[in-house]
Image (cartoon, rainbow, N blue to C red; front, top):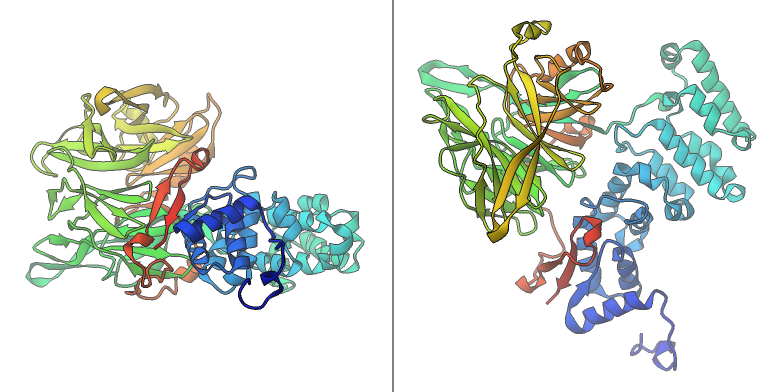
Length: 606
């Protein structure tokens, strides 16, 4: 600008669009190589870096946003979701993976998007129509809410936007919106447009005819097409079948998901999981599904070798990717995520207990070995809670199948790489359902099961369970000398929960089910004094008949997953890895936006 013959080179004063404080951040980067940004400044820094053509700063900004956008939990006052829209529309992002990731982010947080004045003001009719045609909206986002977004966008500047009303309504699945909501949302202004009134008249005729007959008539099929992305518990299932010579092989392992509407598991995909392993543990981090460990598909004399495999399914790209293997091959490993690390705890090594603990650094893509589990402990549940990893461990007489002596909670401190074991032990039975740790509204709970005094209550349901739930709040407190105390808090009354086959329990008016060590929140709401019995019958199918690995709650598109390709051996290209020295790594600065609940970066580029 100043040396290439432009007018700015001889001008006494040069005006630069943008905020002075944003320009100051970029100027600091030019002189020091340090670029400080947060979730609230990322868009403005990216836009000004593009305007000023600061190439290195552009790469850092784009990489930061690409990695962090999946971790942000937006609220209208703290994370301006309108900025995400504007990032997706920047010319430098068009056609890139970053733009797609921003679109997915907006779909995932659709309820907040429609409250953003920035989005309502800036979004074009072309983009909004494209957005409405996406199938990535989450299952719980009803078509009524999609219609609400369209109406809000039109009303934001009705005089200029009214000509787009018919086109946009044509992209809404109006057949999925209850008639009373159509009447409420579509006012006289919208109905005064001839094409809109004609469309609504046809929908009203369809309602009179009946939904099923109207759909069969073939009229406006696009208005009855459900959006395909769902959020559901997922797992891998299968079993061994015996063959000659003491050799057994697994059946074709299948990817199953639990359809909450039909209350049954659906087999979505069947193929040989050579790369993934048999019955891996699962965890979802930043909307990607990670598969950890598992077993070889061939067993000799009843023993199958554990695997060290580690891979990830990225929904945006619809592909599996191999990641660096664990240092210790294991099956039935417990997994948890905390501060950018995936922890793998315990498990089985050739039918022997494993005390191994290691974690995977998602930024550096490498495993680190940590302090082992206390001797003789078998980890059956793990969760991240208030900066620590909380586990529930069983203790056995001699090995994993020799009889349970008890169970207790153990706490791992990442800051000190140490374990603290609760001195109070639970009495556990050999055949009881697995105890579980889970969080609900930032409170940690432990659920275990005991045989009821009245054995007749177990007769109410078909199934093997003869246990009633015992649910306690868990308190984890830090003491002097970096020690911790773990204690059981108030017991949550389960008087109105009979023994049942689905291991159900309640927290206030919500009913939960514990299956294969995974806690799922049901759609059952109960009053304070209401007994939960008949409704649980509908959930019996949650108990899997085949052996399964871990279960995780995952958002994905079943239609895409049916056509999933083999694992891609190559790693995703990133801007920070091509020809860069180690000084290109970032340092975390938690002080910038600590109240936001997320980490922000201070980058050093060299």
